[in-house]
Length: 324
Image (cartoon, rainbow, N blue to C red):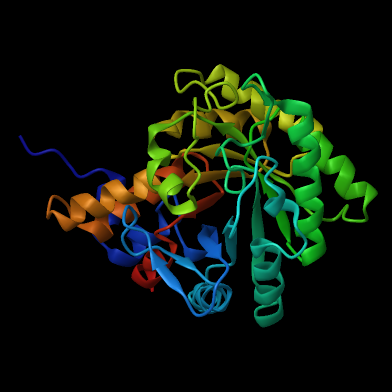
């Protein structure tokens, strides 16, 4: 017995109609391109664990940002690698630090591009933790929050359009909002890393940013991968404290969390398609196990379908090329 085609099957047979009835859109306008920036002259340093991604000196970062903008990608997010690190992470809030200098250079060259800055201490501390560590080896939450707020002000003063605290300290969104407002940056939005899990998928990033903890781990302030109720609670707390966008990180193993956070907060949701997710697809494609273009577009469409309004991804430039 022959069964009639369903309505959508009939529509999908026509290319134009297939596009018209597609439920989820993926385009360059949804993407944020992450960049690692370092001091130096005319330098690109390849990151072995992330094929196709480099650490960039400021001039190269300006050029890379311009390429992203030309491809229709509206925003970049900056991660800094300082020349020197210390226990207080002072390079994070140095007004002449690498991120601050890069923000100024990019905004001068590409004023329409939205520049987001990662607000955290882990790239700048000698011990690799996201906050100040006390003598007993415990991260001091309150002292860390003070320095994070200082960092956010420094980034905003340099011209950052948005600040994005990724540290997961308690109360940091409220502290940043209060400090930004007090210093005359009340219009500067906050993208809060609200549900940031203690994930194995950060490995390549830690190589890129030289931020692997020298001792212990980050499980005391990052979230247990088993907990989704907690993720919703953390996101709602950040909303109460003044977050304009909430983020889930990583993305692919946490699609259910993206959906729950979107439904609970009713705010724009960002999802970070992190370094390990990027590298595993790159490795599989290089080995011939899958088609890179098809797999990447499917993965990012899945992140969007789960509820992400914004996707931060190292694939951004490739995706923009493919979608053209």
